[in-house]
Amino acid sequence: MAGYSKQKQLNVKKEIQSDLTLFIEPIKLKQILLNILKNAADATPHGGTISLAAYHKEHSIVIEINDTGIGLSTAQLQSIMEFDSTKMNKTIGRGLTVTFHLLSSISGSIVYESEVDKGTNVRIRIPKK
Image (cartoon, rainbow, N blue to C red; front, side, top):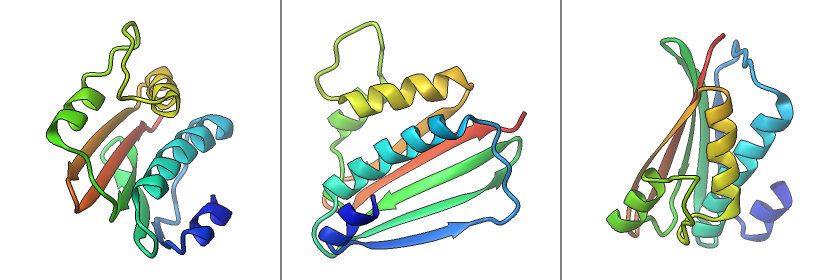
């Protein structure tokens, strides 16, 4: 991911709480983050910004990824949030399909907020065990 963001000259900001303990297999977490970060990098123009934050909230660890990319329309957001793994969804790529399945396997969740031409915020919740 670092090479990809460097090629597009993206500004990457991180704010990660120091005492986080995640109860998720590292390979699952890596796949989830790579899928979301790649989508953010793809949507963000040359010189844009991607921010990653991770913190405790109630009985979860929250990971937020924000970008200054092209954003998603209301129809695109609705299509993402109405994801049904039993149906073919042309809007959602393989990476998000995998991400949804991985989060479901650990009782996690994902929420998208976006505005066209302003960017997207993705909030991932991973339960503390």
